Length: 102
Image 1: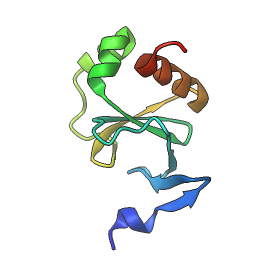
Image 2 (image 1 turned 30 degrees about the vertical axis):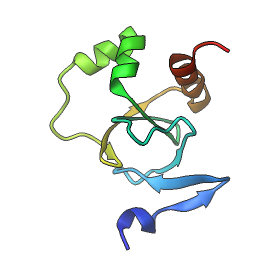
Image 3 (image 1 turned 180 degrees about the horizontal axis):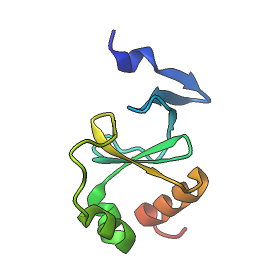
């Protein structure tokens, strides 16, 4: 049994996992299996695409253009970025980036 399985449980239909820091994280519905970066706000993780974020947001474009440390947080083999935003605000922002205004 892998360590990933050991720390997985089901909470309100979402999988709860631990990142490298040991924090329990809830997987957001904005989770793409082919994503290559995980944004974490509060205790919610969003697995997204760096290219989409950089193309749609000059802030993410600037963030990704800065050289990254050789050792950084990882979550499911992707770089993890901890943000100080509310999870609900980040979720709304990501939905607009990916789906546009509805």
